[in-house]
Image 1 (spheres, one colour):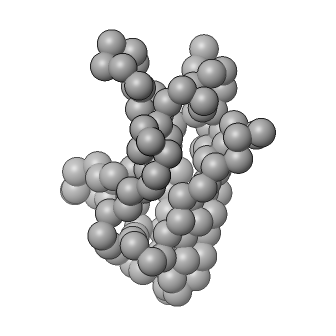
Image 2: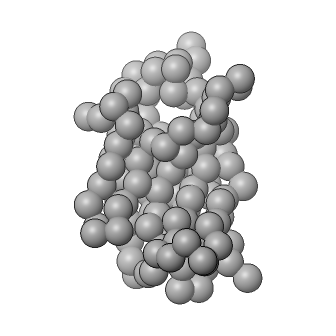
Image 3: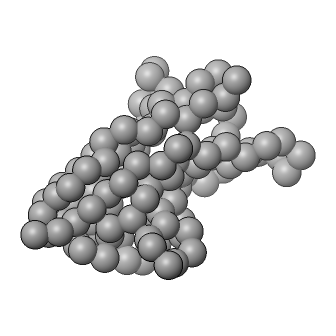
Amino acid sequence: QVQLVESGGGLVQPGGSLRLSCAASGSIFRLYAMGWYRQAPGKQRELVAAFTGGGSTNYVDSVKGRFTISRDNAKNTVYLQMNSLKPEDTAVYYCNARPPLRTLPEYWGQGTQVTVSS
């Protein structure tokens, strides 16, 4: 049973920082491209940051220079370090595991709420 377990969300003031964690089970972490998405109320889910199949990283323009995706292969965990947070970063953040082949399933975490407010 594949699971993506997220943690680290919460309430933070503008300009603050949070680090999200996503622990993956099984061989998913080694074979899949891991990433983070977010969905704000009334908006579509969007890609925030992800590792590509080649191991490089990809960020949505609005978070470049503020967010960093990283991974710890020994712990099967991917992180999203979020600095200089803005109210518009408020959303539910989802961990995502994108399969190397389209015939394989894609996996999502349960989501963790990030609220940026004073």
